[in-house]
Length: 442
Image 1 (cartoon, rainbow, N blue to C red):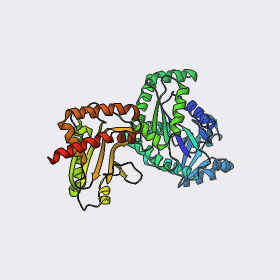
Image 2: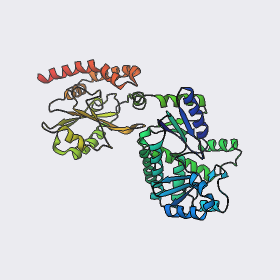
Image 3: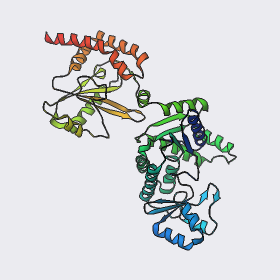
Image 4: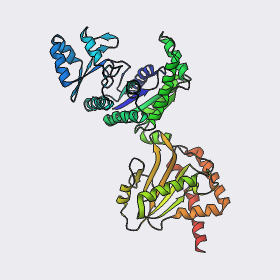
């Protein structure tokens, strides 16, 4: 089963999209279900939910014994905390004065007795973990309306004035709790937040948004987009400004159903750029970082690939050659490279060069490329044909121009096929490298 969180600021159409997307997946033959905003049965979102410690909960049952069964039937048990749902949308589940007791213990929505933010995250995490453990695997997809970003971030900003770092920590904690269910985010964005708010409130027969409300949601959009840059799950942003709902729906379904390989091809396409004079600076920056990490385990560090040839059209990816010390254990080297910063590709199951012992990627995120991207090739001593190729192109501008023309032609057919693009350049690289080696012998 996969969890799909449809997110976005107020007015972008999350609830309608969740329902229609769920129906579309069912039409495609999948078992799908969804929880809409304020859905009383939502197992991981909290609306009109009261927070009690175990002792407080025991006292509650004792004092209101006549409602004990109803209270227990609407209780979420999580570790040492009891959460009681006391309204179903706008309908109270309990009479006064018991209802007032629950309001005074409200957990999220304008609570009068605020729990510490660390406790807020702890309770959320516990509920999400329990949900992940017991959730039925009979479904293919389970969709949620605003349960990952919209409601938790609203509560954290309004109740705690939480910082971006605190919000990122909270959201990543929730993702970790349900990671086995392969969560992903579909984010509905609009270029004009104010316009979407006006339209949504008019359709709901609500008062127009105030200046303060517009500013709040504009800030929320910036916050959401910043948070997504720090998540470890797929996050796809769809612009709803043109309201081309059918087209957007088809794109969303295609994105949900794509294979891992198809997703990588979409978010890591071939990009060709004119020469950037900052590329040597990128290399120098990463070289210093590698020297700090690896110390004397490396014999040589060199800038290779097209970004090392002044004036050459290239993918904006800096290739670096690491020539490993002769007797250095490759596993020891891998252990020195921080996991969160580098992706290690071993030969097994990956289309590496026959010369690479391992390859490290840096700058690959779940939503695409970072500003600076690196491919770091770890080689045995003396195994560096790329240096011959690089130097030949530097010394022979006509060969570099021919190589640039070849890459532009190939780009048309291989934009989303990185392995095919590399293979198609192989014969040219082989011929030029042969010439370079022959020249070096003279």
